View 1 (tube, rainbow, N blue to C red):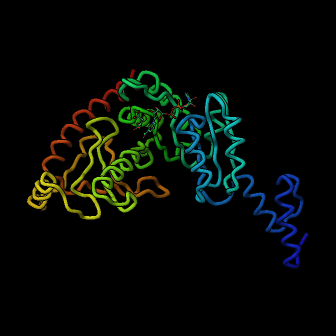
View 2: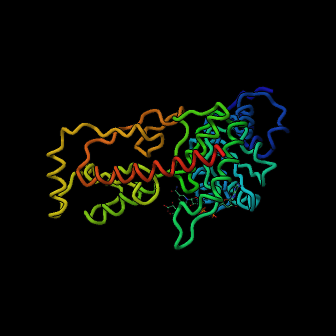
View 3: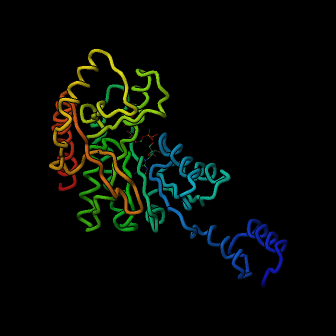
Length: 314
Ligand SMILES: NC(=O)c1ccc[n+]([C@@H]2O[C@H](COP(=O)([O-])OP(=O)(O)OC[C@H]3O[C@@H](n4cnc5c(N)ncnc54)[C@H](O)[C@@H]3O)[C@@H](O)[C@H]2O)c1
Ligand SMILES: O=C(O)C[C@H](O)C(=O)O
C-alpha cells in the first residue's frame, strides 16, 4: 500500500506506534523504518549491562536509555531484572529495552551487542579494600567474559566490577584463550577517579568542576590512582607547595614523556570510537611528586595484574 499524501504518511506513523511491528502488513518505507526501530535494527549501539539491577547497574541503565547513540539496551542480572526492565522501558526515549534473568538467559542477553558494560558482583563494605572482593568477583567476571567471547566476540567491554586492576586482566586472559582478545576493546572504567579529581581540584581553586580537567592514570585502587596535577586545565595559581610543584614542572618541561608500556593494563586518557579505544594519549610531563607516585602505582598495579592472570590460569 502506498501513501500519497503527507496526511496519510502521518497516519501510517501513528499506526506504527499503535501496533506491534509483526502486525504491520504494509511495506511502505515509513512502516519499514518503524519495524526496524522496534527490532533494534536502527543505526546505533546495541548495549548490554551485566549486573543491571544493582546500585551501579540501575542508574547506568537509565543513562544508556537516555543516550541517543543507543538503539537497543539489554539488561541482565541474576535477580530483579523484570522490574528494572519494566521501569527503564517506560522512559520516553528511542532505545528498545529487553530484560534477561539468570545464567540461562546470559547468551541471549549478549548475542549481537556492540558494547557490554559489567558492574556485576559484590561491592565492598566499610573496612574492606577493593582487593578483598577478588575471590567473589573474579569468578563472576570470568564467567560473564566467557559468555562475551562466545556470543559477541567483537563487542567493546567496559569493566566496572572491582577490583578493576585485576578483573581487567582476568577478562583479557579469557579473551586470549578464546582467541578474541582485542586490547582496544577492553577497558576498565576509571572515570570516577577523573570525576572526583575534577571536583576536588575545582573546590580548591574555587572553580566550576565542569571547567576543570585533571588527567588521572594508572589503575583504580589506592596508590595506583595517579592524578597528574601538573596537567590540570585551566592553568591556575597555586599555594607555596603547589608553586614548588609548578617550578618543578617547568624545570622538567623537556622531560621525555613517561612510558609505562611494560604494564599490560594501565588507565590512560583515550579517544573512544567504533573500534574501541582508537587512540591512547601519552602521560605528558610529570613533576617529581607524580613520578614517585607513578612508580608506586606501577608496583602495586603489576601485582594486581599478575593476580588476575594467575587466577585465570589455574
Ligand atoms: N569501577 C568503578 O568506578 C566502580 C564504581 C562503583 C562500583 N564499582 C564496583 O561495581 C560492582 C557493583 O557495585 P554495586 O554497588 O552496583 O553493587 P550491587 O550489589 O548494588 O549490585 C551488583 C549487582 O550485580 C549482580 N550480580 C551478582 N552476581 C552476578 C552475576 N553472576 N551475573 C550478573 N549479575 C550479577 C547482583 O545481583 C547485583 O544486582 C562492585 O564490584 C563495585 O566495587 C566500581
Ligand atoms: O570504592 C569502591 O569500592 C567503589 C568504586 O571503585 C569507587 O571508586 O567508588
